[in-house]
Image 1: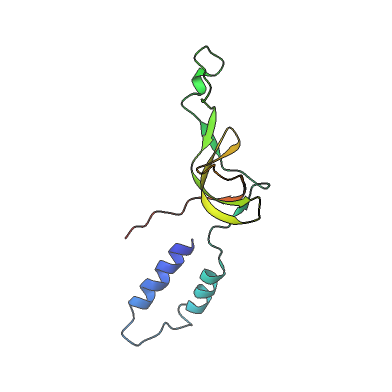
Image 2: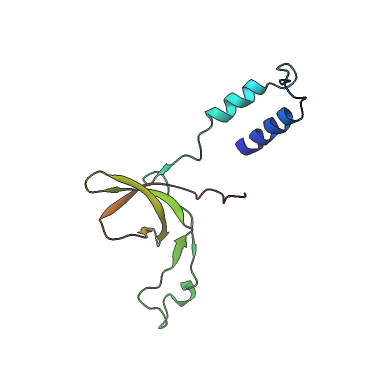
Length: 126
């Protein structure tokens, strides 16, 4: 919704003759600006509140059969942005996904705990 409001405001401002400002009575531009600035950018979700949606893996059909192997999983989520916290309290943002309800971070060199996540942003359109 915010992106649509930004586009609407930009189109309205670009349609005016040079040097003219939006008429506050016709288009409450300041109200639109306030709404835009007040909206959080896709808030972080604490992991104790919710987890990403998981979907069946390609291996699900083998579960319970003699074809099931270590390293297979039933469900996984899409990659998301996560904030991880290290034992010393330092925090970083990286990407991760869940596999069977457990976080799978890409870098496993240092012990870390995922504390919050959010969906990946939309790709740059240029």
